[in-house]
Image 1 (cartoon, one colour):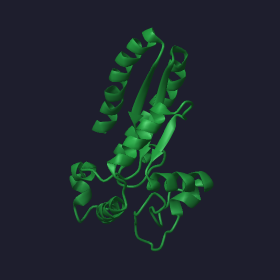
Image 2 (cartoon, helix red, strand yellow; image 1 turned 30 degrees about the vertical axis):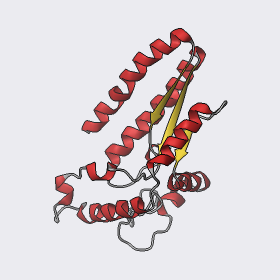
Image 3 (cartoon, one colour; image 1 turned 120 degrees about the horizontal axis):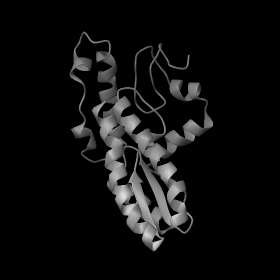
Image 4 (cartoon, helix red, strand yellow; image 1 turned 60 degrees about the horizontal axis):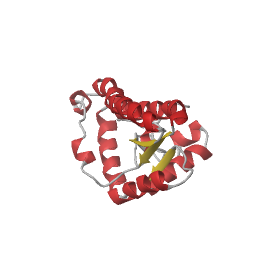
Length: 190
């Protein structure tokens, strides 16, 4: 819950200040760093995912509001990027308790994140996406960064919610090696 309360003020305050300055000159570019997780949820990361959904909605809304002032908004949506990001993750103590109903899921999620990170992109991929976004004449609002994010979004857009959230389920246990592999048998769309 804590992250949910601080995410928008951290994005909103700087954007509010900078957009006032840019509106005077009738030009400017604001790049907000989101995540592929701003477009789909996955187990074990609900707080993180919800903050990224908030960044997405905020950015899309202000894109409309600031466009008349010549200010462009871009969202960069990286997938797994090989940085120290995963080293800083904090897992709730209660979910790690062997008696917790979430214990097995969280162990599987941790293994899944390790697997995802092995195939992650370098930070250079994100830098190139940002550079392309700010130098392209008529760019779109959203810019995916990384082959995994591109694959997940292609799957998400070509499948129903039920298909996406049950893709590649191989066992009755909780698995995570990417957004298509989720909870079973308590699947949210079954």
